[in-house]
Length: 243
Image (cartoon, rainbow, N blue to C red; front, side, top):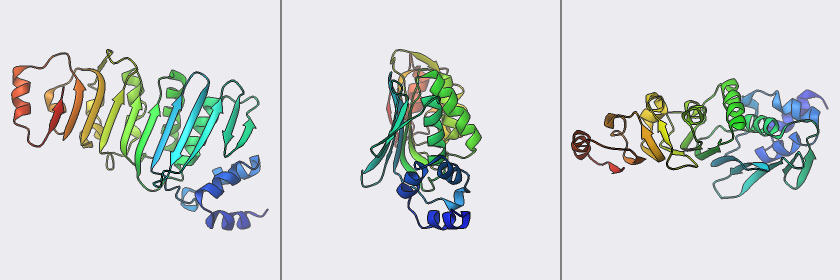
């Protein structure tokens, strides 16, 4: 089919139609993936969620009306399922395919997301996701960013790629709530400084009280807090803090 005709088809298609076209054949997928972002429709998602367990990766996209699309990548079957269609990935690795799909789908996202969640406890997924976001060279516009990891490197592999101008709430989770994570690198980011609320379910180390009093809401574990710090917090207006 001539490229001009395909351009017109894409121009008058919504995100779901383009995504379905992308699954039809390798040629169509390559054509769509090579298009400039300006030619792609806005997906208009409200949330994006990526998680991995022992046997699969799930990539879920939800609209404001709570309808959703989901990719499921099976490690056992080495396959990808979407909209009732299952594709054998042959010699491709599911992490590589999932990351590539997310990369192309992020190109469709032009409006600001309400919520974005990444479960990157798996170190391989963490590295490949960070490399993809570096290559993509664009910020994720989201109001709420949740990152589930177990290390500073995990949080920092995602955090710098969130748009600090849209970020309102930052939530950092660890599987082990008793783990201690040094936060000195995190608190220097624009994303930390611009967010309005912070939630951490682990012990945050190497932080000054001045690093958190700009937040309107704080939930955080700290090993100790000095009388001086408590006095500073009492003087911060309109801030809800739970330590």
